[in-house]
Each structure stands twice: as structure tokens, then as C-alpha cells.
Image 1: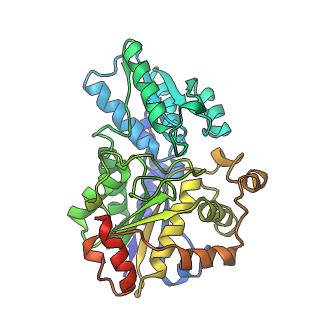
Image 2 (image 1 turned 90 degrees about the horizontal axis):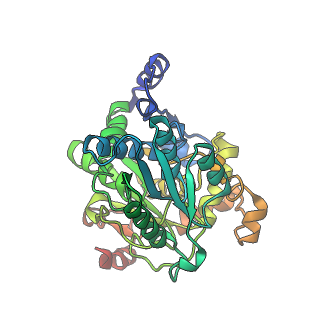
Length: 376
């Protein structure tokens, strides 16, 4: 029988006093979902609210770990400057922790950066450097151009530290130290599956390393936005921020995942709206994709399972986009009704990647198995 160590995340949190902002990171609740889909009545579905971290996202963990590591290694000195390419959460996390530690922070952004994020970055005192849209690649991605600009700035500014989350080999360790162990402490037995988004692959690598050793039966489910290149699918433009890259980052490894899903903007954004109305949770765009993929996985299971969905961020930074009906309509993304969303999840979302040990799973049609073989 599933036992959730809920007291650890209530009593300790009330009694805990953080001496610095980075000590407050990671003390977030798990919330069981009930109304977003009928599958929640059959299975144990929990969302890990990383949106409750100080700056509102899971990226607080990466930022705190990489800054502390850089200080220990002498790469970041008092009075130094932190420089990073980010269109959202990692930039906010660096700006928050950098402000608390007295560092100057420069964030390289682009036109896709949501207006609320720009306002929050400025509120933290960060300096913004925008890369023009003319630098976008053929699929409209700005990532490589932003990263090149951040690298250039870090080489020109003295006492600068460029974390470069996409390429930093220390990035996954934050999720071994924080996220994976938090899940382990909360569940007995371990969950049957953990569902997470992939961009830098830091979460994926860190969490997978932990569970492969301590709970090898736990399925690791990787979620990306349709149009991204991480899972080797054809690239095209997409509106999602927080998920998606124009390249597979160095920490991405197919050995770390059991299932891979690509979720469209249309499904993910519709899920965000219904999650707010059905569960009272106003969460970010990538969370819509992660929950949709998790429900698709549950639809394909023949037994009752427990699943943890990792929520990366809050919804407040998407009020002008994902939660703006006019913006959605202007981008040809009308909201799906709840019954339409349920149908899309169950009928359209199939894994685009399966690990070799999952290919003979009884639910998967033989035709689909053949289509997946070329991905590994």
C-alpha cells in the first residue's frame, strides 16, 4: 500500500527557518490530483510543486548549486557578475540568488521572453541584454544566439561567471542533491513513475541517476514540446517556453529515460487552463505538457500505479500569453474543451521513444513498436 510521508512536508516546513534564500529551496509540497481527469480516480497522481521555491520555479535548485559550486572553486568572487542566457526561470533564479548574495546579474534574453518575466528580472535588479530576432535559426530558435552572446559578454567583463546551464556538467547534480532525494523521502514504496520536462536535461540526468540506483523499477518519463529537437524529432516553430531546444544538450542520454513524449502547444496550454479550473492550480506552460504526458502514460497502464509529476514553475509569468485568450486566438491556439482535451490525451499522445526494456510492454501495438526502433 502506498504511504506518503506527508508529515515531513508539513511539520518540518512550519518549523524550518532559513538563514539564507538558498536554504529555503526544495521545501515544497506534493499535492494529489483528483478532478483533472477520470484517471486520477484509478491511480495515485501527485504533482510536486516546484513552483513553491522562492523565485517560483525548480531552477532555484540549479542556480543555488551552480553559484555555490562556483564560489567554492573560486570561479565567482565577491563583487562579481553572473551572466546567463535565459528566456525565463533560470534567469529569474540567478537574479534572485544573485541579489541576495550581492552579485551583479546580466541576463541575455530575446523577443520570446514573456513580459512578466522581463518585469520580474528588472525587479530583482538584473540587467537585460536582448538578442535580435534576426539571429534566430531556421526553426526560429534563439538559444544558440543567446548563448553566443552570453559567452561573449563573459569574456569581455572582468570577474564574470557564466554558468551556461545547457553545457555545465554540474547542472544535473542539483537534482540528485535536491529533487530525487525529496521524492525518495516522501514516498514508501517508491513511485512507479516520475514525469519531468527536458530542456537542459539536468533534471533528467540527475533524477535518473538516483532512481536507476535506488529504485530501478521507477519509470522515468521525459516530456518535450513538439517542434523541439531534443528527442530527435523534426523541428518546427513552437510557442512554449521552459521546454524545447534546437539541439540535444550534452547531458541528454537515452539511457536515462524509459518513455519520451512530445506534447503540442495546443494540448499543453489547454491543460494549463483546465488545471486552474479543476484543481485550483495556476501553473506554467511546461506543466501542462508534463501532466498531459503523465495522463497519456496512465491511460496505457493495465494496473493501478503511483506517479509523480514535476511542476517546474508558476503560471503568473504566463498571464500575457498562455492565460490570455486573445493571445491564444491570435496564435491559432484556441482552447480545447475538457472532454476534447481528455480525448486528445488518450488518442493522440503516444510515446515517441521507448527504451528497449519497454518495447515489449503489452499495451503497445506491434506497428508502433516497429516505428520506435530507429530512435535508439
